[in-house]
Length: 225
Image (cartoon, rainbow, N blue to C red; front, side, top):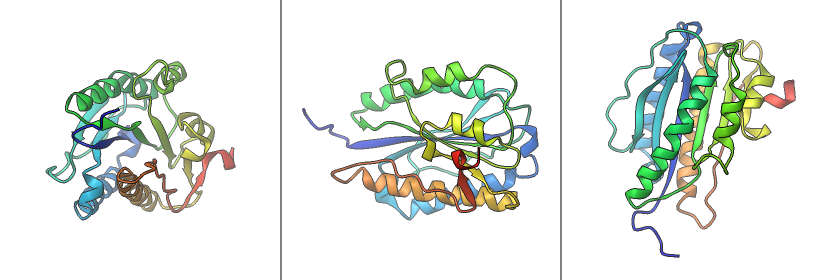
């Protein structure tokens, strides 16, 4: 099999809860993503292997950053809070978005690794059936580029729900009780940064893998159900 002439890429999607309950903490999340961007500028070899998207969700999904090469990205648009918390909107968006993105990158000559979704929510989802859309999204026989989903819950997020969103038990995390919310968001962004850098570096090795760093102050969700 011929090697791609443009190398390997890992698409990474950050799904950030922009519901009204995040109002007091959205600045912390914006600051954390800004720090991630700065850190990746100092890791150009890892950054070269990643294409980065930031999506804000509430009642709908708003694309903030799409498939950007972080080495040449300008300042990220800021996340802003609004509305409720529709997990259904998230998974339906990704069902169409990810295959289109994978096909676009392949058309540019890249070999594309299975995308990774980092999902952060601070509460319970709307009362709607999101599980069927989630199943379709993560079914490799149904969705091109069916992603690995790393789910992190803070504040009032339910451990069982976060565990159901994560595609593997070890990919679901909830903030420990009593942890300051701003600190938890900062730790999420730090872990995300480490994961992106380690995964990007891995793509240049003989055995590329998705590296998931557990945020400090978080517990694997299945442990606390």
